[in-house]
Length: 293
Figure 1: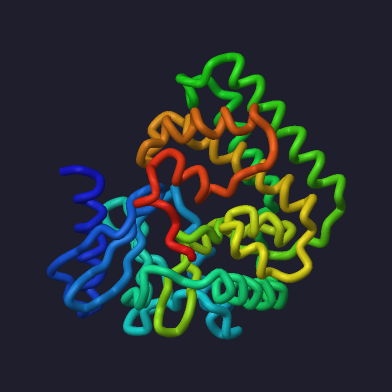
Figure 2: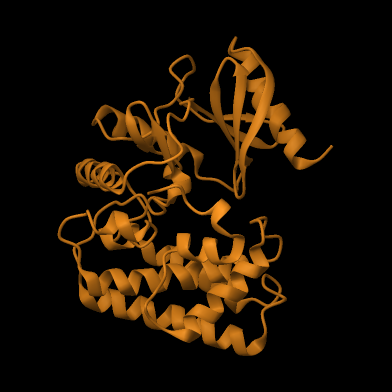
């Protein structure tokens, strides 16, 4: 039995124990966490191996942000708001939203992100700093066992770039708050209630420009009062961090090695720094590009 099959079995078992009929499961996304639509109960389930997630943090934060009226996907109201464990997997249950359109406007996207940031400024929860994310990427690059296919020259280059960007962003002394961490189009649902953000486990304290570095260029154009210089540095940082993760042994990202090679090339090429959506279009073609128009 594969890990995906076991994860699906864990999610359906949890749903059944809560009297939520789950005769079928559709895989919506499979990367660091498996996202499923369980039917006929119509529940959105997120599943990850126990110990490889921060599910309780995500559940607690989602409750707080939902209560504050933030545009986040709410937890499933028919289940207790907690993390369920089955067969070595952590399962969380969320409200499923049928997509209402394949596209969302940059204006709506930017307004929703601004509203999310406003709510997050009012939520006081212990959270890591964005530099912890940098440290995770540095750990992958520094360890040949974790990134065996990364050449010595690329290892030295990427390590130096991550360290220099950490210093440059820190030296700016920008105002920091709790941002989403990865509000790219894959973590935004287009629903009848407007854009809703998912995957809150990446939340970490830092400047809002760190969030905008994950968003399409058109979205940034509609977000007020951005520091363009800081945004450029954060975009470069995101490219460098994602490059590190694409070279990690066991990375499950589709076409991950091609992404890793392209991101290293872009870092060496220099500005202007692309968004991740732009890189996706280069590697996978327009059919897989983020659906934001």
